[in-house]
Image (cartoon, rainbow over all chains, first blue to last red; front, top):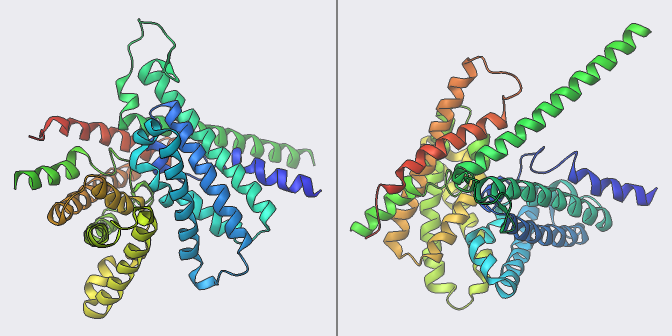
Length: 214
Length: 192
């Protein structure tokens, strides 16, 4: 039973409550760094670290943080983790750090992270909070990666720098430039809308059928 | 002088904060459903950006030279509290101005456009006046993008659009087209 519960918290972040595709949170880093799959993964890992770390800390301290100043406390905790992630990336992978540039410090302003602290970590025990954070962060990473991969494949004809289509492929330069980010995410959200609309229709049909059979 | 003009135009059009750096997307998508609200939000953002530029300059010159690793925490805490303080001041001194932009001020303080401005200005080691001009350009550019999107959205409310596309998906695609239009400004100026 206990096991199930934390599994549930983990899995919901990946699909049903996916922070990007369903809740539309954390858009700024999402679009800015996804012009290649590698950058997307680096950003995803940094966000994962920050979200899990700060959820753990916030949830451990949830009984000591006064209600009135909780937001400031959350932000300072998040900022500390972001600083750690920033310096770690600078030390380990300087090239990626240079490419992501100012967007690593900007993880602080990712509304998804603060949102999780406020909505979940500050109310639930540590273990559940960490599971929830891991789920949300994985969902975020999945979204980042799919966007980064689509944009790199279309815009560069390559994935992880490996050429996919040979020399005859004319790259869609627009996809790795800023407009491509907006358009790709727009199209993905369109797909999600369609999926949801179909599901609603299906549920309505089922309800209708049940009513008439009664 | 030329340099300052270049910084202004660059922040305003060529490197528009919303449409090429993707900063401040949450208010951009969230609040842009009416022209009037978005103009007021733009005004408030420009104001906070000016305050931010001044704070960032003060911090960079006097505090952070000794402790660069505190940059992020310092920026957030100082900017948020300064804005809070100014908000109280405005409320006291000019209720009309407070009504125009007051409710937005606390929302904007931890917006990524604000923090991004402070970080970009630091990375490019802008001086005091350069910082101010940069903030002004970025703020007006943000307002411009917001007002443009709000206008398009108000227009689209009245047209017959399939239910499937309505909502965030459509706004993102509109933003993509706007962003393409802004790419046209890329050759406007060249830093000499």
